[in-house]
Length: 286
Length: 107
Image 1: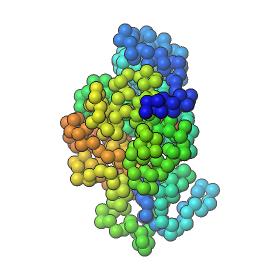
Image 2: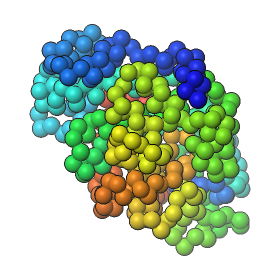
Image 3: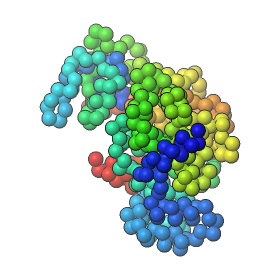
Image 4: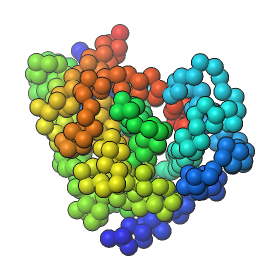
């Protein structure tokens, strides 16, 4: 099984590795001694990334009362680890948003991913979970395994999408039947190759079966719920528009009330255009 | 005639007017029963709003008492228990959004 996933990833050079600047950021995420000046040194290598980050920091995502002009100031007000997570999210989306696909509308794919990230973060904030930026990134990247399928197994991926769209199958079940694995496992394997921490890879691996998560059950449950919520109100990443099945145990685990859903969506709606403009400027201009 | 945004349209609905692209070419003719492939085609051409006739024979739009979105929502949530409190809340919010979207499209 792992061999099949790794072979598929190795066959996808566009996705198999991250840009150098992001690899360094990932190293820093995994290193507790990382300082603000380390981050500044990395960001200076990539002015376009710095612009995206500052765009995000100055968006309604944070709603700071005054404008933040420099990365060093952003580190001070947001925090080192939090900014590194945003670097990761901004970089991955920048690296892969331009990938073409004839199978799905990529604008819709990334809009769903972005909205899921915002809802995951909103649920985490209501749950009073630390470092909500990490939840945002986990939600943002939850479907990244689908990109590998679209690029490297387009015919079978198309069959899975058709089964979901026309026959009403659950997409993950259709993928499991056709590939022997689903996009969630593939995405987690891919992110593992990028050396991303388990706090990000496990919620991606289990976002369709959060009860199977071992080390990060809450994170997995929140990404799962956010995917269900985002698919409900703004559509899925694909054209099937079927909401994935809710895992009742995940809902119970969070202890959240249904009363938080409407304000979480109101926040996500208010942030979406700003964050998309910062992270996906091409899509915003289209 | 009801003008519905594409998000509020579902398979089985019947077009009351031709749908044309920006160049004036007809993509789908009035009377077409919309399939999932039609919806994909319309999205690909950037079509945002279509005309759905509530009185067209065979159109499933007028039948549901809760409005045009009902049949769509049943299909959208086919993998979920609609009696679950979270799913119930999501359906309520979807209905509110569809109503707002339809009102905006009709202006």
